[in-house]
Image 1: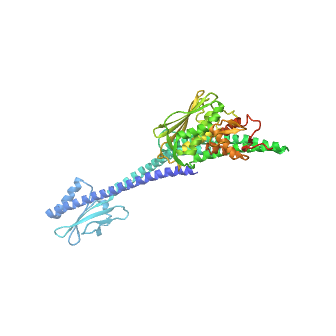
Image 2: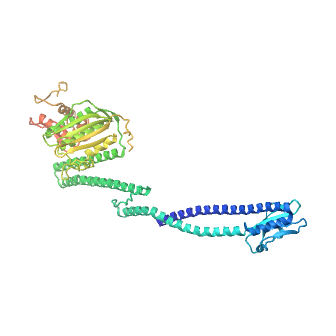
Image 3: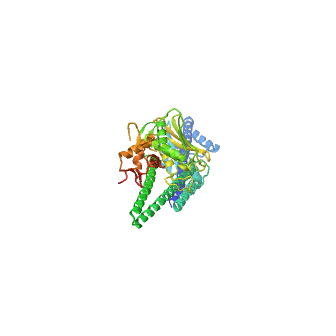
Length: 465
Length: 92
């Protein structure tokens, strides 16, 4: 209902404004026309009055009568009312068209400016200007407003017709404006209604490509939908993965607990309890990592920023994993080079490096190598962890940062899938970026970029993003 | 165990240990008879306060076990499943 009244309102507004402004224009024109017609009539009366007065002064009443007669014959303009009143208040001379005889001319003013005589049954009036002559007689010249009124009446008639036509045009224009304005909005509303009803965000608003504000709205709306869709998909994937990764240890936990309950042998019970604790530790570790990632993603992670020499952080990571790498037959080393000092939270950066090394060793077969290096690049400190492992297909590269994503879905190894998400979340919380480049079969290189100074575009401590 | 010369002997036999193995053994000896958890070992030996995915503690413990236990008939370093490790003399 609202959209209908909106369209109607728009059309009425348009028609109203159009009609209102035309009315003002027409009104002004009418007033101007009436005024100029009146001025013209008055000018004729005055100039005639002056002329006849001059005639009277020159040749008396006979000269005036002759002039009037001449004037009537010449027919220069429409006929006038001319009267001369003597000192005895008697009309010495009167000339006027016969059809004006019903005007009540008896009470016309004899001095001053203008006086008017009206007649019963007539709309027009007789406008008369008097003049006192040198010998005390009074000369009156007047003119009926009849022709003027007729002109104005026909003007009004024409204006009425034109106005009616204009109103129709205004309404049609309003309807047109309503259609072109409201249609994209209706389409948008239809799409939104569809999304609300079905919950599917894959619907799109048609883009007209006209580049106007409504088209821009459609384009923005579509890109917002695309963004929402990808976010929802990512969240759904994450949730699926979390559910899947929780179900397996939970099932094992339950199986173990059942076995412990079923047995009366204290050794078996103890075994079962121990397995339960281990399983719980795994689940707890996973949940802690998820919460850390969420905290870093939300920007609520508190970072204790200090100068962090990256070589020592790399050495720590190598120290942590050298035995494990050795056992697996993977060579773990740090490239020679000058030390680079980044600004960051030392503990978090140690965890970032440890996770990267952990990941690299995990996916590097025996006989391979994992090499760490650090360098300065512009205003960034860059750490790389390169391995000679199985590599990551280009299509999978963006997905490895997702929570609980696994390069190989059939893998049964547990505790995977959060390390790289945590790396990216922590590095981004520092105002840096984590990237990967890889060639399947040849190995992968993970790159972490960190700011060299705190004066970046974003303050990692407040972490408001 | 001689902390100054960093020499370790068992049953009159000198055992060569790498620095981290030495640090772990020292920690276990100081807590002899008590159970130390993996988290405790991680923070004491490496100074890491989080759990890395790969079981680096297991690797180090098995290395230490190779040096101090395997050549001898009596086992001293025990795994307490679900909790951690303990170093204790066999009960007579």
